[in-house]
Structures are given as structure tokens and as C-alpha cells.
Length: 135
Ligand SMILES: [Fe+2]
Ligand SMILES: [Fe+2]
Image (cartoon, rainbow, N blue to C red):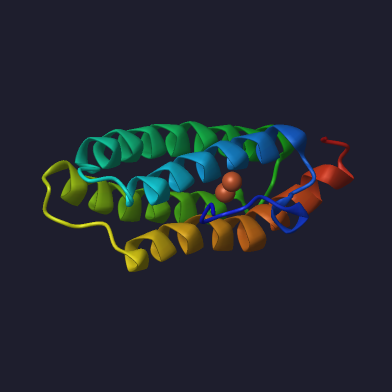
């Protein structure tokens, strides 16, 4: 069973953003599935690289929308993004150097890392944007 299943509760009501969130979920689920392998280290390494890369792309996309539509809380939102990236890079670094084993706690951290941000902060900006007609 996947660690995270996308559902309406995770929808922010903007299709392009939902699609990007689904991709982040897919990568986190890949990490989780790799726990069953005999030697998952290469997959952990690759998936952390994918997750970092795609997270940066996704955050930049959101920040571009804030800019474009004059979302005032975008500055605070970007600060949260920066913090999330720092947390992710710390984990990535430890897996890159084989200094850490994957555990259910690490996976739970990644699940919360993504879903709390979507459900709280992303839904705030999306309400603002949807009112302006963004779909
Ligand atoms: Fe997001
Ligand atoms: Fe965000």
C-alpha cells in the first residue's frame, strides 16, 4: 500500500498544482516502496535527488504565481518553502553519504513534511488564486 494516497483532501483546486503535488507524492511513495528491497541505497539516493530537484521546481512555480497575482502572504510562504528545502537537503545529504537508514519515522516525517504544507499553507494561497479565476 502506498504511504500517501492522493485524495480530494489534498486538492488545492488548481489543476497544475495538484499534478505537481501528485508527482511529489509519487517520489515519496517510491522511497517508501524501496524499503522492501535488499539493497535500496541507490534508489534512496536517486529518489532524494529527484525529490529535491522537483521540490525546487514546484516551489518556484508557486512563488511565480504569488508574484504574478500579487499574493501578499507570498513572502511568508516562501520562507516556509526555504525551511522545507533545508530539511530535505539535510536528509538527502545523510542518505547520499549512507549515514542514515530509512525508517518508518523518516517516511512519516516526509509524509507530514509534504501533506501538512499542502493542507495548511498551499490551500491558503489557492483560495486566494481561485477567487481570481485561476484553475
Ligand atoms: Fe505546493
Ligand atoms: Fe507551497
